[in-house]
Image (spheres, protein in one colour):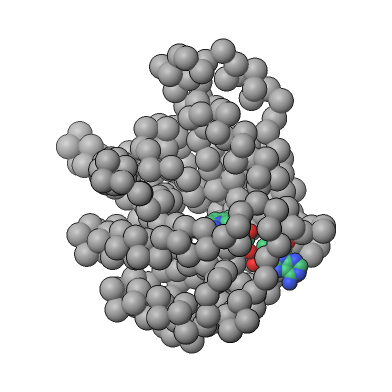
Length: 299
Ligand code: FAD
């Protein structure tokens, strides 16, 4: 891992950045601009999501392969097993191996019909994410990340069941878990204790979603069962038409979250960038990360 130093000799840090495959040429330009801005922070890896029901299969592949080909970054490809046969998924995995990609974020995914639809495994597909992890392992020596849910997955009846699913993915060969985003760190700390009690010892990296648009973040949060602290609504209140102040408030909110995590022993952070760099860059700066070039230029 390439790790940045915190000023004052703090802990080593590893950050990773998540992007999504854009739909238009204009959105694609913003994606590459964000990648370019964040690359000098030397992330451990950058990941690219897979659209609901596998809908972005080709676009995800194109972007991941381009990152592998044209940059020094280490790409990770998200891959879901919903609505696809084993053969279809294995073909995607082989294509990543051939493109030099060595890290997959293995997921179940959600049914294409969207929220509320009941998940049904494909009759000829991987029945669980743990099976997908095994399938990836059989094909090549990939690094395999999986999801984790500090506030439990909305379909989970309780935390024990939720953690059973994570434990099965770890037993199948997952090497890292990345959490669903959360805004109240207390959930993460409680979850970390639960995982330790259960003997799950792979790194569980907090997924951080900087809030640039409060209404949108609140919608995401509701869908994922993520709790939003009451104080947040007040912090963003009245700023809908004031993007400058909103950005400053958003930067301080995300800085507060990551610094508290840092003070509580967290050294790895995964950022949901939404293909925008500024808040993520600011949060990394607050954590003490500096771009590789500035460090040498300043010497
Ligand atoms: P799993 O970890 O397999 O299961 C999640 C939960 O479902 C379990 O904890 C449990 O509550 C329940 N469950 C599963 N199996 C059983 C069972 N047999 N019995 C009882 N309960 C069960 N979605 C995309 O479409 N594309 C992406 O690129 C993408 N990237 C993501 C990245 C991260 C870091 C995270 C956290 C989520 C991502 N998602 C993505 C969303 C994810 O697909 C959904 O949250 C989906 O509902 C669950 O997929 P999973 O891999 O987390 O499922």
